[in-house]
Amino acid sequence: MAKVYYDKDINTGSLQGKTVAIVGYGSQGHAHAQNLRDSGYNVIVGLREGKSFDKAKEDGFDVRTVGEAVKDADVTMVLLPDEGQPKVYEAEIKDNLKENSALAFAHGFNVHFNQIVPPENVDVFLVAPKGPGHLVRRTYQEEAGVPALFGVFQDVSGNASDVAKAYAQGIGAARAGVLETSFQEETETDLFGEQAVLCGGLTSLVKAGFETLTDAGYQPEVAYFECLHELKLIVDLMYEGGMENMRYSISDTAQWGDFVSGPRVINEETKARMGEVLTEIQNGQFAKGWILENQAGRPQYNAINNSEYKHPITAVGQELRDLMPFVQNPIR
Ligand SMILES: NC(=O)C1=CN([C@@H]2O[C@H](COP(=O)(O)OP(=O)(O)OC[C@H]3O[C@@H](n4cnc5c(N)ncnc54)[C@H](OP(=O)(O)O)[C@@H]3O)[C@@H](O)[C@H]2O)C=CC1
Ligand SMILES: CC[C@](O)(C(C)=O)C(=O)O
Image 1 (cartoon, rainbow, N blue to C red):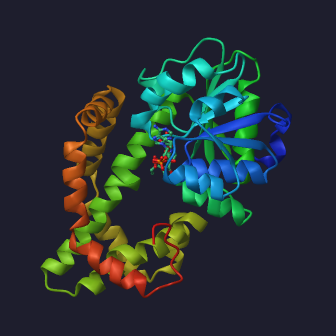
Image 2: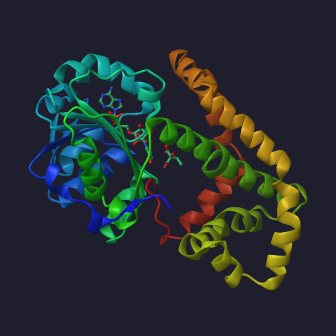
Image 3: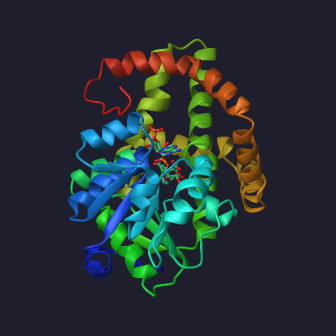
């Protein structure tokens, strides 16, 4: 079994007393900044003026321009959107990095696909939480955590691995488990997971179920509860105790349906499509398409985003969730 690091296994000395610049204060940025601060580290935030800048100030951080934050940092963690990182890196980060400091990422995309080529005089590592930023923060506050991967691309100090592990510990990940990876493995598995399973696979599955029921004349509210709302409750059981725990809690009728009908929906054909998705990630085709889409001003992204928003599941979901104030919604 791979080595999994927990709090007790990590010596945080290599990060103690250091200044960490968190560049970006969005989903991951606010969580890393707040968790590291609560873990006792000195955190500064690098941003442009705007919504995030005001929020980070409101949250009590020392907020500076990106360049001013990087200049004073022993560790610069880049938590800008992947597609925006190369430009900000060239203009504001590269020439401000202190000799022997560390440049860090939460996803290997830009380094792995050569969109950012770090200088030779800094450590380069990643700490990639395996969960959304808002949950990285929420679980930390609940004395729990989201697991993370760490990987070293360049080790100038001889300490990069220790600093990365201490960083992962500081954001709360070592409460759940921290695993070593490479930039290549993190980038390819993360892109695969979000496309084929977690985001792309899941939204397609939910919409297909919702549409099958509503096309057959069932009420959209019933279809929403069945195909989206209950999904969280079922996944919670899997999160807590694996598929066996979910199957322990559901009825035998549901379990028989799971056995005989599940493989009719998701099967070898689906796996073949998943294989195609993975190949396009590995050979750089996906990365090229995403980089070009951004250079063109995101015409396809915006068109699909607009039409997805108009899907009937959106309106019925908003109505039903508004009547469930206990459901935590970061964008409400
Ligand atoms: N979202 C997630 O949960 C996960 C993300 N990651 C990785 O974390 C990184 C950050 O992603 P994510 O948190 O989703 O990003 P978000 O889009 O949520 O946040 C981006 C932040 O960067 C700021 N920003 C954007 N452009 C600039 C600029 N030119 N100069 C200064 N600040 C800028 C934004 O501020 P403003 O308000 O001014 O726009 C915002 O605070 C990515 O590498 C991603 O792959 C990894 C694991 C999970
Ligand atoms: C599943 C999406 C993710 O990879 C994540 C939250 O881990 C992301 O990049 O946002």
